[in-house]
Amino acid sequence: MQKINNTSLKNYNSFGIDAISSSFNIVNSELEITSFLKETNYTQPIILGGGTNILFKNDVDKDILKINLKGIKIYNETNTYVDVSVGAGEIWDDLVKWSIAKNYGGLQNLSLIPGNVGSAPIQNIGAYGVELKETFLNCRAISIDSGSIKVFKNNECKFSYRSSIFKEELKNKYIISNVTFRLSKKDHQINFSYEPLRDNLIKKNISIPTINDISNSVIEIRSSKLPDPKIIGNCGSFFKNPIISKIDFKNLNQKEKNIPFFNISFNEIKIPAAWLIEKCGFKGLREGNTGTHNKHALIIINLGNATGKEIFDFSQKIKKAVLRKFNILLEEEVNII
Ligand code: EPU
Image 1 (tube, rainbow, N blue to C red):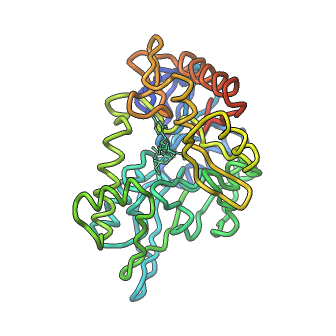
Image 2 (tube, rainbow, N blue to C red):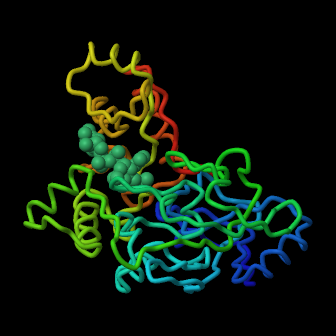
Image 3 (cartoon, protein in one colour):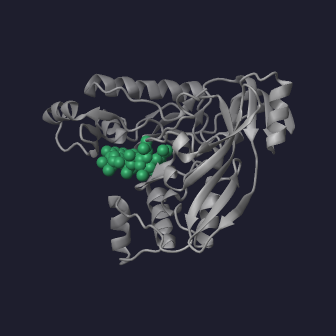
């Protein structure tokens, strides 16, 4: 374990916020995690993965535990699938690239999502018609209260849209140390139901895409509208897409025309937060050191030296404007510390 006092978090969060951590602890194994918990008397630390979904509003006085467990290992294999065990500190997209290179199917639609493997189940990452829960087998997690290790199977994680048991009733109760996935070796499930993905493949005259084709198209689409956090600080979607009732949607539709929507269930509709934000005049708007991306209204950006507080205040302005205009309360997708 490596312990650093009073260090900047700038390189540890994709917003690039220069907050100071009074106690920054990098852990490389389950044993280091359990020893750390014991030493600190099982006090709740702030758990940091890739830092791609977190906004540091202020300097941090609590212990930060930076999860750095590495390793991608096949531990079970048949003619049709492989089970892969991955350290929580591996970079998500490195795992996706590894799987594509080996022609293992399942993760291709989730290409280029920023973040680490250990954070992926917490919010059930999803993109272009696919969610993590479709390939997730189980994860190992360490109880913050006792240091004991528990394996959570897929059905125990209560996955839902951008959520899981680790974001709800077990929030801040466990540290995920390892995740296992079941990936296909042949007859891959190819999903290009998401319209922009289908359009991209048609444009390239690809009618029967391979997992590599899907991955390339997803990378093209993401790169064309989502800013690279290495160049412009951001955390992807700042808010979740709100889910409203069909009755509320009908009322909304009478006031606003052509609202994009996705049917979720027989009485629920998901509408893009980006559309609501754009309609409130925030797309591409800049205010001081922050603003929204000019190609995507849901992405709040750091234009250089924004503080966490500045970004937070701007996000709350957006939230208020959407509430006033549409009577819809946006919920943050990013974790605010
Ligand atoms: N739209 C606008 N204005 C904009 C951008 C989009 O009106 O500036 C509308 C368009 O109608 C568009 C719709 O919003 O069709 C949806 O936009 P997009 O396809 O970009 O997807 P999203 O709903 O904004 C979600 C995820 C993304 C994921 C994409 C692709 C959430 C909160 N976000 O975004 O995930 O990459 O779908 O599947 O569910 C993330 O979580 O950080 C993230 C980037």
